[in-house]
Amino acid sequence: MAVDAKMVKELREKTGAPMMDCREALAASDGDMEKAILYLRQKGIAAASKKMDRATKDGKIVSYIHPGDKLGVLVEVFCETDFVARSPEFAEFTRDIAMQIAAANPRYLAREHVPEHVLEQERAIYRSQAQSSNKPANVIEKIVEGKLEKFFTEVCLLEQPFIKDDKMAIRDVVKAAIAKFGENIGIGRFVRFKLGETA
Image (cartoon, rainbow, N blue to C red; front, side, top):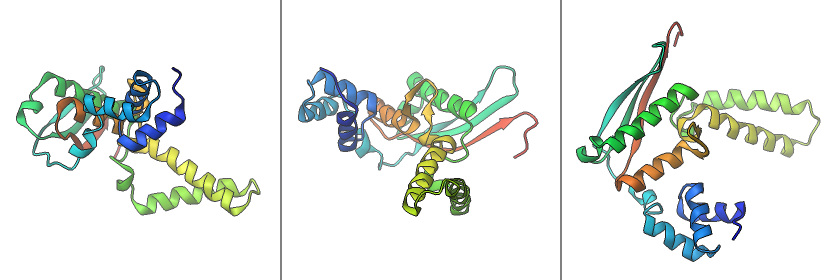
């Protein structure tokens, strides 16, 4: 059965599961929403959202140096237990996050961390650009908010498309990791160094 984007979006809103998992669940359940939710629960993906409030007291700080030794990243990744922190799968996940930071150069972890003065500055720029189009004020505000959403996907790590699968945001990659490891996973501080680049 063909699964349309509207159904995928609805299932994602109901479960918080990544888009690709929602598409797979709907295809496996012939488009039946309730069966798809059950499918996701059985896989443990829907349960990942509930684990996101649990305390993360373990984890590791990971370094990644890009070939050529001119670009490097340090990132703090949390989990609940030492058992998960020491697993090869967690090491692979943390390396993917570090490589994402190296490649996509996020400035903030999440949209909530973008300072208000930066948001106001961006809004002012977008508003100024849109006003030259002579569109009504309400349309201009929609254009501004649309451009702000695009800004978040460029500068916020959790909003960025994953470098290994651009259909998933990093937020979805983290949720998939929570489902896989069966415990809460979080990203903390990170820093990206490029040779000769000033902070």
